[in-house]
Amino acid sequence: MARHTITLIPGDGVGPEVSLAARRVIDATGVDIEWEVHDAGLGVVDRYGDPMPAHVLDSIRRNKVAIKGPLTTPIGKGMRSVNVALRRELDLYALVRPCKWYPGVRSRYDNVDLVIVRENTEDLYAGIEFAEGEETTRELIATIERLGGRAIRGDSGVSIKPISIYGTQRVFRFAFQWARDNGRRKVTAVHKANIMKYTDGLWLRVAEEVAKEFPDVEFEDRIVDNMAMQLVQKPELYDVMVMPNLYGDILSDLCAGLIGGLGLAPGANTGDEIAVFEATHGSAPKYAGRNKANPMAMMLSGALMLRHIGERAAGDGLEAAIARVIAEGRSVTYDMKPDRDDPSAVGTSEVADAVVEALAGSRVATS
Ligand code: NAD
Image (cartoon, rainbow, N blue to C red; front, side):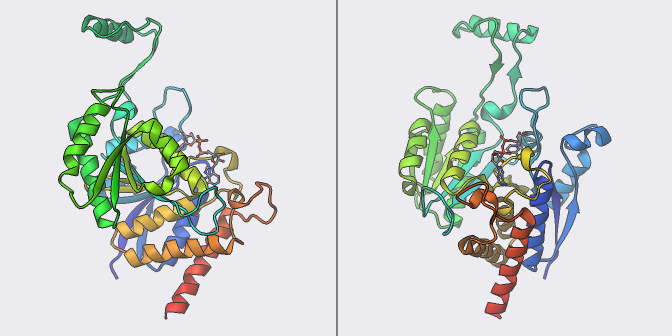
């Protein structure tokens, strides 16, 4: 069996715990992986002068595949998100986030099986921001007025929303191809083209053009506010939804809410050559170091990763083992219990024990 070398970034907050749990179950599938473990984030700034040091990026570029735990971004302070920087730096332009309900999960919904493909490099996340009160911001405001735009109040901060033909084409081509490869029937383009005619309008126009290249996949579009309501009322009507960065961020959490919460929502940041797998959730600082966080989102990200590296049977086996542990309902964390203080909830590492056991059980059953 071929050996795979994969970069592992444990992350911070609950990251190290959920990453260790994911690593254990991935190893338990029997796939031969050499892990290159590298720290990143706020904790390494003193050591390397950078939250995403060059040697970590080099490791990902070399191995082409990485799995990472969440990294904390201070809110409203100067530092930009390391997660956003990583996606941009490696040009991981499509973030695939499956949201699937598993029997046994307590949720208002069942049988939800949705996939969000979020454009990952443009839109309001491009990081082009002008702070209130600065000279450059005043200049920008004056330029916009001079070019015939509407007056902007002098005490405004400004964030720029670029959406390009290039960026839109490649994420839709990726999404249609993904839908085709994974037996999906429909792609829905999400936008606010009625208001933002030159950004979301372009997005919709390009989507319609790319859709013609994939006549075997059904195509439709939805305005983002309507999409939010439809997802809450009739999630079964949707399949693969492609959206610009910010809507993707918000609706990913909404979809995670439909299938039992952030503890169950995995993700894959994908570019033409490189893929970095990570859960949708953040570093949940209040649970850091407490063996409380649900590692299943990170484990399911591991299942996506195994399929990506060509180990489809191992990926399917891992997902099935997680589903079995959920269905049994004994070895699950607090967030999957009806009451958050349920004393029968287990910890992060016990979930890993149970999934390893379920994997061993399925091997015995099939041998
Ligand atoms: P969060 O996802 O960390 O937490 C939101 C809520 O969900 C909290 O109540 C938390 O306790 C719960 N939760 C999250 N993951 C869980 C899990 N695995 N098991 C059980 N409960 C879980 O979101 P936040 O509080 O908005 O962000 C915290 C930090 O994480 C911020 O610094 C943010 O920037 C960062 N963040 C990082 C990433 C990433 O690394 N890709 C993604 C989102 C947020």
